[in-house]
Amino acid sequence: MSSTEKFERELALHTAPTMLGIKPANLLTVEGNDKLIRRNIDRFNSKASAKGLHIREIKRLGGRTLMLLYNEKLLNKRLCEEDVCRMFSKFGYAGCSTCPQYLEKLCDRMESSEDFPHEIGLFLGYPVDDIKGFIRNKGQNCLLCGYWKVYCDADGARRTFSRYTKCTRYMVECLDKGKDIYSALRIS
Image (tube, rainbow, N blue to C red; front, side, top):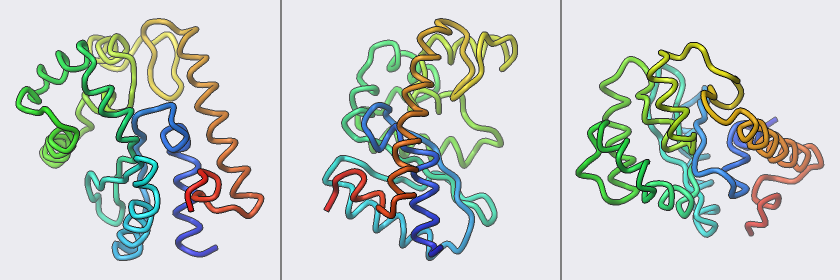
C-alpha cells in the first residue's frame, strides 16, 4: 500500500462524517515522513477544496502530525451558533470572527497546552452541554462514551454515533472496492 493509499485509508477511518457533510470537523493523527504527509495534505486540499473540505495541521508531536479536517460551510455555521460563541469567548476567542482566526487561535492554544484544550469539542461539533458536563465532571460520570463523552441526551448521541459509523463504513467500503476517497466523494 502506498503512502497516499495509507493516508486516504486513515482519512476514511477517522474523518468520514466530516467528508460526507454531517460533521463540522474531525481530528486525525498520522505518523511518518513530514514531506509525505505535507504532500498528501496539499493534494487533499487542492482536490477537496471545491467541496469545502480542508485539512489544517494543528500540531506536530514527535514523528506524528495532528490535523483537523473540516467542512468549511459546517464549521462556519457552527462558529456562528450563539451558545458556541459564548463558550469560545470564555476560552479566550473573543477577538475571533472568521474561521481562519478561530483555527489560528486553536493552533496557538494547542502549542501552549500539554493537553487538548476543552474547546476542541466545539470545533468537532460536540453538544455544548456535553462539553460543559465533561469540564464540570473532569471527564468522569458520563452517561455514554462513544465519539465523545455524553452527559446529556444519550439517545440523541446514540443516533449521531450510528450516523458517524455508517459514514465510516461507506468510505471504507469504497476504498475496499478500489476507489480512492475523491471518487467516493465525487470529486474529480
